[in-house]
Image (cartoon, rainbow, N blue to C red):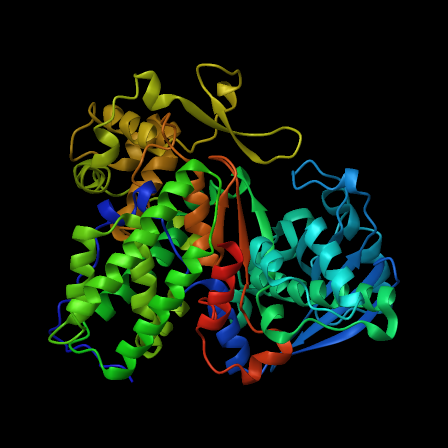
Length: 573
């Protein structure tokens, strides 16, 4: 299907000065390389199956269930606990102490003793303890009105109202999916030799995918308990329109700052994929037809994507206009001739907003799975290898790297209040990252080392007292407070996409830009900011369920089928 680029084709990578700005990162869209899609492709290719091995839940929706995902060599089991939570106790905030459902992903198949141990701890979440036999810890709350509506309709023998399903998009939303050693769970190092789990966030994404199945099983179970023989199940196409919601706040934002080498691997994979497609010499008929179809589906999907946040309202309006402009452009400029994708992207750079450009990037990758999907294997990194500082490097060479990669930071006056308006700290109560207002709130003495631009400026000033031939080791012996940014400069010297090229303590900085970038790599959609510091999303909407995976024909579920999209359009009109 794909035309492979010639060896001398222009493999043009976008500049980090363009890609790594917060405005661009905050316009990210899911793509073929997003972790939800790479996970499901792998599960399908390897013949994974999911078996519900336990479902002991009463008519009130209280009990426990186990879903075992079985692969060629390993089994991972979602252990779920369902609760009857009073409405007044339901909260998405991190300070909540009770939830509608709680979960863990167990390494293997749990015995009854394991389930009893987990039942005493998992519902407590942070207040409980799990072991290294558990890989994740999670919790979720129902979308109360839609949940009640679906139960009532199914119990009465009717399908849920498509408009209500489309408006909400999920029956449960997770408020946390913890992994990597939190609260006693297995450390990531335990899983590095397991192909499925060594990929970024596949453990967490598998957890969410199984939570989606549990959620639909639970709502249909409660409908049967209420309606008896007349109860029905949800029609498959409508069922697939139900994803898993998520409320994500500041706790996630610093991740992209504290993992520079990993961030580089994600961005570099996406940028390499785009460059490969732009280097395709000719677009075949099949690729053009698929792109045209997905463009229509993306436009319909965006028309059904709504937000009340003023920033996102403006971005969505621009995106709708961008996709209309793209469709009009293609009518007069078909994808013929040499290097059509490069030509199309260059036009988009001149005409479309960053939101539209990034949507186009995702769409351009879709017809070229054979060309880009292998890049998903390179999106992991051994961060221990990047941690060691090379003290033998001379300061002259080091400053050359710093000036090349950090010009954006060195040209900011951090003495101005607006440029140092915020400070990042960790809350005492929940040990979660928070953002303070430096000139209006106490706590700046607890500031975390996330003001990279300001710290680079301080490093540059301190280096002025040293000769170019001096060694970094000598400098750091005298100034160990600069070690964290010296390390970052050395990482960025060989990893150009490792650093967000914006001031993270500026008064105009929007944390939701960092959240959206990370969540787009997860594969989330329907970004709906509720402030500049937290956002609601939907995960696995339109994705196949476990029983559908083997026979699901195409890996294009991120864009709803036109029939479903048209229905959604009508529902929100």
